[in-house]
Length: 155
Image 1 (cartoon, rainbow, N blue to C red):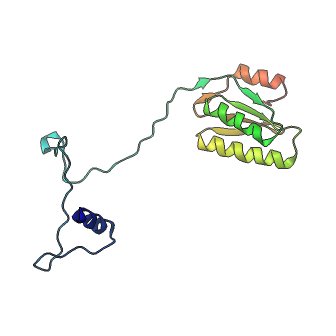
Image 2: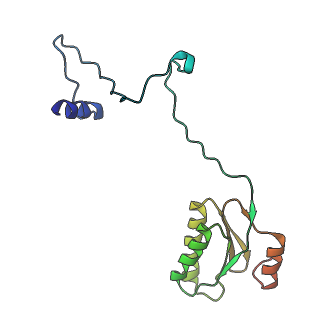
Image 3: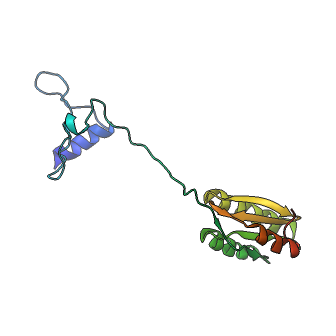
């Protein structure tokens, strides 16, 4: 058990490598891969260089049209409704008309951060009215016309 801790500390660079009898540093041992792991042969595609891990994020390309949910907050606690709807992939109209400037600013900051974190977008669509759209969701033209009739969207 002590040898395992010693190797871990050497690996982390917390202590120097122990020297063997010749005075040379001992080569680190490869960890035992376990019973269900075997090295790949060249015929199976193994190469001289170690493969580099890569992160690939794929986003669905299909856009979906959704009905817009309108939120007219009266306090900062109403921001949770905006977040819940946006996380459920539903576009949100945030109507800040009639609120004091401090509350407007806090809600705009929260909403823009939320849209950014979820990969969506936020745009101003009327005076003190914002449209938050999740990624890969599109607001249809007829939905825009419905919102325009309510004074919540300018073309």
